Amino acid sequence: LITLIDGFADASFGLILIVYISRIAEPWWLTVMAVGGFFTGILCGPFTGWVADRFSGRACWSGSLAVSSLCVAVIAFFPHPVIIIAMSVLNGAAGNLTNAAKFKLLPKAPGMTPSSASASIVGIGSFCSIVAPPVGAFFATWNMTATIVGSSVLLLVAAVIAWFNVPARRGHELSDAIKRDSFKDIFLGFSAISSARALAIFLPVMAVVVASTTMEGIAGVFYLQSITNTAFEYSLVLAMWAVGALIASVFYGRGWYKPQLVNAILWGGFFIGVAILLEGLVANPWIVGAGFLVGGFFNSIHNMGIRDMVYMQVPEHRQGQCWALIGSLFSSMVLVGDLLGTPGILGDARTIVMIGGATATGAAV
Image (cartoon, rainbow, N blue to C red; front, side, top):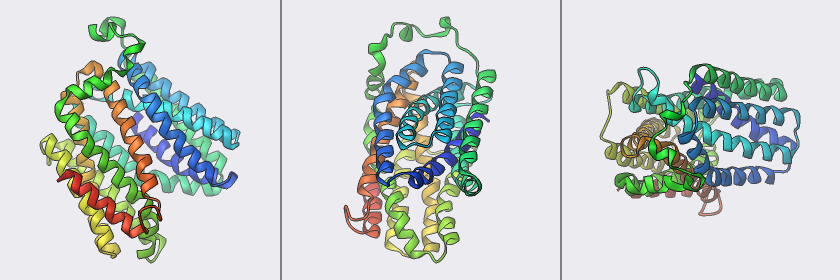
């Protein structure tokens, strides 16, 4: 429930924020916000992971959600570009801690396993990516400020629920390894990744897949609009990716389709690339939509394979740090994808889509 409320608020607010700042400021402020988010992930990743591993799950999860709620509220009532950027950066740091705490704590919930936790997080994310943006956009057309305040209230509700339901961890429950840590040890997540051989080998593949899908995400906005006839058709094609991801999370969580972790990562990356490559090669929205359904399915399998590999190969007392660092790597690849996916950098929109698909497919091969 906490993850659902948080995910819904984040997904709706992300879209609203882009529209909001584009209305009140020059377009280059969006670039500043994107770059600020990138550096937040890189610089805060090790620290937030260290905090998630060392301190009470209740304090980390509830506290980070409360900070996010405050940041969103400040943006609603003080709509100045500088304040918006500052609050976005702070919200990004709080989000890093939320994700690290969520990754570490969900498998410990009653009735949950690492695999079911992975499936739940990915499935909820897919659901929110389908439902939240149009709901947020609908209310934003009515009253932008009230909608942003609504996102803040949802985050605060999630924080309160987390405080009363996530168990507090006592000092004696910390592992001896964590007790020996000091602040200088916040980068030990790097050694945890490097010691997990399979994880270290496949991280470059994961990074390339993230960059490639981000390239498609940018260039595809222009390309898909050129091959679809209406806004509804365009949104329907986009939704197919999230629908495929949602289906995969159900299959994976219930064990109906659960390949070995290496296969999940490699075959997932391969079919993601094939779906994007097909999009560029065949300018037919119905074929692209079918490809997106398959691509979204294997994107979800790929993501859940990554999560399960961290659970399986990284010691529990380093999982928060490890996941935060992987998240930082993915954030940097998103920035690379945003840059390379901009039409005119590597070619026109359709060419960039094909390059992204071919790159992801080649990395998996």
